Image (cartoon, rainbow, N blue to C red):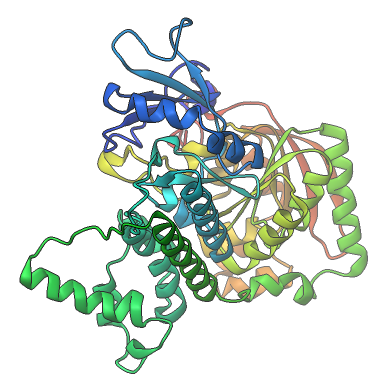
Length: 489
């Protein structure tokens, strides 16, 4: 059963917060419901009644919260509290973010922590998993992370977690080329010692790495030998404690900005400038076809597979759609995310390969959804422009499987660009496999897609590529035995 087939009120089978002693989160099709245990209710109610909560919600930095349960008060009969939040759809995970998104999420966390200091609050944990992207904007979603601050303490207890989960992954990506996607396998981030051992000796004494990697690793080693418990730093001067905390957060912000680095570049981030297999007239005709199709179909939600730097995602957003832009090239997608964030476009960027989708993760694969479970049946229109030859030649996927995937993802419309074997890009990737793929034709495409779709419109470009508008006629579950099977649902 796909997500779209679930009852709107039925909770998803997901346990993302079972480790949290303060509460538990459940998802329905339309909202997130949070159960706050009795031991944490007083603190949660105090934060929800605070001016800080109101300020953060108004700025969009914090997810909005509605108190539900008994109509006569905040507390349920057993002392528990029930909260409701709007559903951020799709859920995105840190291992699907670009470096710039990672930095934005880190800076959001530091900004909230900084505001909390003067308001008498602190964040007791600081992990990327507390942040989601609503379109291009990061939003903090864990209201149970706030607790009242000891005014005499100059220690941010979440400092170590912030460094392990936010800063060190960026450092590892910059200096060791460890992909951010690898953080999926590290629930509590990287330990300084892991980076210290991997870095060349001369790099360990780089001033930018000295405190967060080298000294931290050496102190970590010494601490494990002495096994003496550390004591929180206190001062008799609350103003001094506040000053120290603000300075510490400011330094973390500087370290995040340095580690995130400048805009990246890749082969595909420059694709549109180098795409000599399109004439200028072909590009104009392709963009006009997409605009006309969007105006004709008026989709509310669009999935752009192989979005690259986002030309068609932006066109869809300008037409009034909420867009999810998917691409495996982080540098190309980062260019789109920066533009969408600056213009506040409703575009969510996900670094992922639709042919090798992000799996479910965590304990019993129930802490985080798989990519397909988050996307299936959530879109009125799916764009697959200049992507099918990638799936055929690089991923070796049969046309029937591609057709079935399209029918799983879209509720109605699919816009596809057919790339014939005569195309220069097709020939470049064919690599002597003419006997396997050189014979493929548009007729083969139509036969494979006929079990799920019918053709509504067709435009042939001057370079031989063909733009097709399909309308879904059947979902995989509607068929007794589809050519590709029904396992993708």
